[in-house]
Image 1 (cartoon, rainbow, N blue to C red):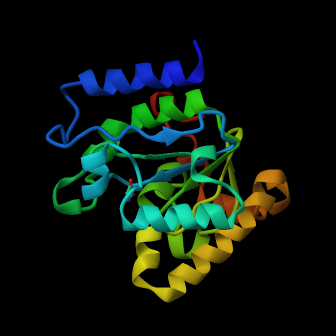
Image 2 (image 1 turned 120 degrees about the vertical axis):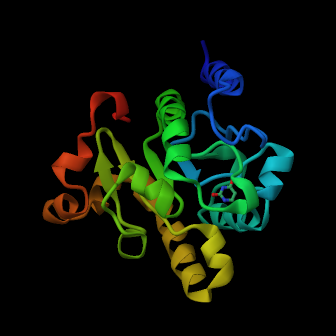
Image 3 (image 1 turned 30 degrees about the vertical axis):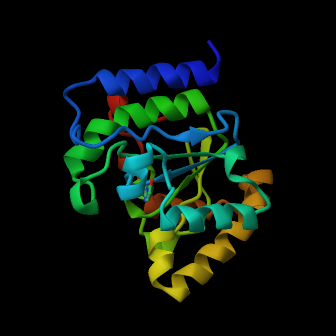
Length: 211
Ligand code: URA
């Protein structure tokens, strides 16, 4: 089966799962190039995403498109998704149990895509990969979890509210192509990595292991 076929099958499985939370909202599975080396992962769909069934299509999405282009890429060339695949009411933060419920599907989606680099956008997505990391301290750094490199970045919605955040995000996106080319060169010192992602946290029980 091709990657797009596998992704379609997974999407249908999520659609059919009546036990998932937020079923009053539409499913926003993710979209883009299944062979992309880079996958961007946001938090959860908002109003516009829910209406169109596509990730990052509101104001934060338009900024994300611009940032992707500033890295010399085009949106259709990368893959974009969220941890939580349906919109929480009133755009509130996703609850821990909502993240838990959708987590196994994100893990399978990543397995299918098999990207070299994962770019979590914002703290919810970052903490899924790096539970003890802090977004303001660790954004833009390169981590290795299993075989994959994780580069957490600030959420574009935060950049809409602060010029300082926007400047940091723009600088981080400009560095991405170089990171994709040789991520090893950017890995933080091993001691720093242990502090941020202690071994006990980086080895969750096998059911929850992502990579
Ligand atoms: N914010 C997100 O985290 N994801 C989206 O899809 C849109 C806005």
